[in-house]
Image (cartoon, rainbow, N blue to C red; front, side, top):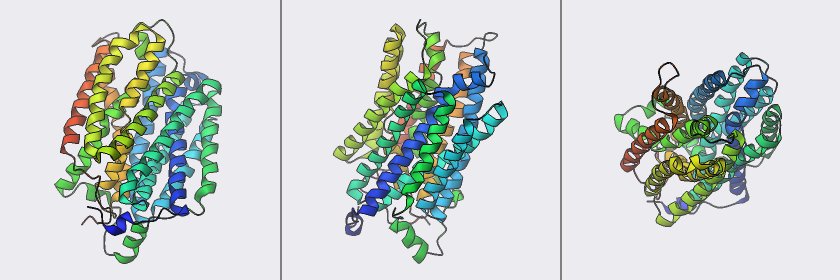
Amino acid sequence: MPTEASDARPLDRRTLLAVAVAALGYFVDLFDLVLFSILRVPSLNAIGITDPDEVLSVGKHLLDIQLVGMLLGGIAFGMLGDRLGRLKTLFGSILLYSVANILNAFVTDLWQYEALRFIAGFGLAGELGAGITLVAELLPTKRRGIGTTIVATVGLSGAVAAGFAGKYLAWNHCYLLGGVMGLALLALRVGVAESSLFTQVRETHRHVQRGNPLQLLWPPRRFLRFALVILSAMPIWFVGGVMFVFAPEIGKAMGIPEKIVGADVILWAYAGVVIGDIASGVISQIIQSRTRTILMFLALLAASIALFFAIAPRSAQHFYFMMAVVGAATGYWAIFVTTASEQFGTNLRATAATSAPNFVRAMAVPITSIWLAMKGTPEAPGFDVATATWVLGICCVAIGIIAALALDETFHRDLDYLEH
């Protein structure tokens, strides 16, 4: 249960500024993260890759590279967050991915694109976990769910902004815009408060190990806790890694005569995600439960995937609308990241909260590989695209529900504790 001290943390200017910076940082983070989904086709065409099958395979290859970068970056920045502080990690992450995206605007060869997608992914990995950890530790227990929902909602709006940018700007200008916004955000670093819980642990518990990712693997009960957190959110990145990224191919396979445009998919889908994210935060506060909120949204996700394949094939408009509905059902991302931060002690919190979202994102690598294998090739055909997508989607949701049912409830948990 929360202590008086944890509920008496002040909402001063420095704390509110930290919430604002974390929210704006995640806005730029999501803007840059979804850019490749939007710009995959035009950017690859611009460097000479025009064959549709090659665009699909190279696009998956570049997405995999970015996600592997995020996986490794999540571990690295998580360690730094528990060792050097939440703020240094937050701003180091923003600086790295901003520079990478500016350089990405000038690529002319595939190897350059590969290198910069890896570096950008590595940098993108650190922002969300560091920001959520900072906000969760600064805010009173009863209000931290509101704070983390604000961070995630503002952040997810960055994906909507990326959708608009992708519609009206050239692909390289979009990368430039994302990088410049990130560098501009660094100007707000002055005056942001560091977490008092981190400072206290660093100064009074010098003997306690901080930021060791191996602690997430042992003892087995702690590893199970970490694995359950990841698996509970894995269905979100089935949607993000398959349905959003490869929406043009899915729409074509459904027989929709109009061309499905990646920028429009991201715009509609993430508009739904923002609505779902606000709803999940409000519901979590009302029912005072993280796990029940996650379970509720997983049930909605299963239903929305089924409805998608019943309604989306009717027209491009129906397709985009149903993408928004599916996106809304994945809106428990903020609750998931908050839960990840609450499941672990102060000396391991940033490591867990930063690496968990990136392990979830990296799950898109095997998920998209399974999806491609299920639908087969012209030489060895498998399921049709629609069947492969909904079967894999329902399997992912089922795994997520099992994991969420086994998670500990953390809504009222005081975060002033250590992992030993």
